Image (cartoon, rainbow, N blue to C red; front, side):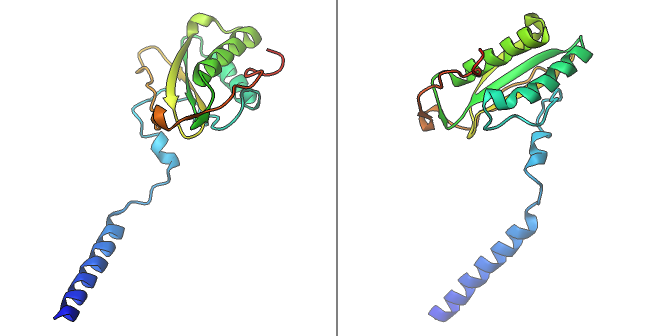
Length: 161
């Protein structure tokens, strides 16, 4: 009797596993970024885990695209990471805006800043939004209670700032 129950349970588990595998779709995680309702995404690279200094070449490319399209506004969404310092996202936003304004001569009025909350790794999304396109929204994935605060770096915007 117990042998029959074991066989039935084992069969049910195996069948459930086979059906579950058959129903799964094997989509790369990278494709999920593009399924977001945010049509205006310009740069799929969000600079995850990089310092501001390491991210400057990407910001330079973004500034070039902004100069080429004068009608579009820049939306910058900054996220702090699981391990971050106090106001990290806001500081990264201000560093990025200051860099775009002082180094590239971009008008402050074209730059919109959004504190996105927390992701697993710190990141800064650079979005170019044409008039009439939907405005981007942040998508934090980490709850504030899970974040561990550390000491802020002496020069969060780089040595020369």
